[in-house]
Length: 524
Image (cartoon, rainbow, N blue to C red; front, side):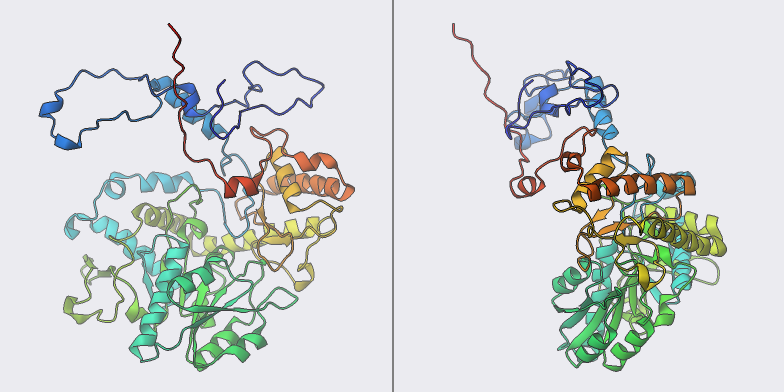
């Protein structure tokens, strides 16, 4: 077997089960060993036969390729097998519990997928005449109504395509509102330590200066410190609720009142809305803008590059500044799409567009299907069950793992633990890697930063008690081994397709380009 340019060679872990012999292929039963695609084929052969074309008469003209493409030539079976084998090495929500904290990786009902694939939603084009896409616009419009109702807000921008995109939308609305009233000098955004990491990045990207607000020992915003910092230079506060410690910010209404009195706005990160949907309306807490991750709260597990969708609900004060397009439904049921600020001067203060077209149609359809199939009472139960599952994990493991906020009251959708109490030399990463051997994707590690060696676990509402009990048992077993100083944890995982990597070296010196070695020419 050839070795790629990084010097790495695929190998199977050493046998630990009674001295089982190594296999010739490196494969261990159904744990398939898969080389790089360039090690299966080479750039000098092709898996497809093409007739010689008339290059001179080609419509490509001088754009016709003159050099080899440099890709491995594989047959169709080889190509299908390669990517299918790779897919078997990927963890997915359809394989087991996905405990990533603050990510809400939950089961996606297949009904949602069926609806999103209906031709009237899946096959339309954003440039079609409005009269030919009334059904699709109806989905966007009805979903917008639901989001406004569930959050208690005044308006909603549907086009942002992800959570961070939604954050930027909200911050741009705030920026436009401040400029409209002649207060563009407000350049400071306050971000609590318990907020999501994208919040300060978004504020900085939009041209604001970010200042941290500390957390109290119980894991919530230090309200007194925040109030003391408010002043004429503060544009907004970006707060995550429930926060990344898995706790509800009980003083949010007080914070909102104080920020408004000081002339600022309140942005709420709604990525954790799954924990309070149907239970709490952010608008009632004084929030001015909040993005909602449709791909978290309303069913579709995100990851792997998408798709995502991050509509932003807006207060009455910020609604005039929201981006276009927006849908409008008339008394006769006809829906139109408002795409320009100048149309009848109805949206003169809109800051413009967030994306080329209208948003993620597939995500809109999935989310509305999820909402309608649950109903208002079902959405409330979603939050209740998510919180119940997280508290069950917290209380089941607090005797084995350090739970820094266990005395702060019930957690919300996620439970947080730390590496305090593990044997010297053992840390969170050893626990996480050993969970892979147990058949689970690791939880979120080392975040939030307010907890040293954090382990953030979110079971969501879609896991059964039996499934959660199995996860609890696995995490308890690994934690007890770490507390006892089991050295085998240092080399975990042992049963995965790959052993533990030097992650620092891999991040700082990645090998991303395949360079083919020159062919050896036999001497005549």
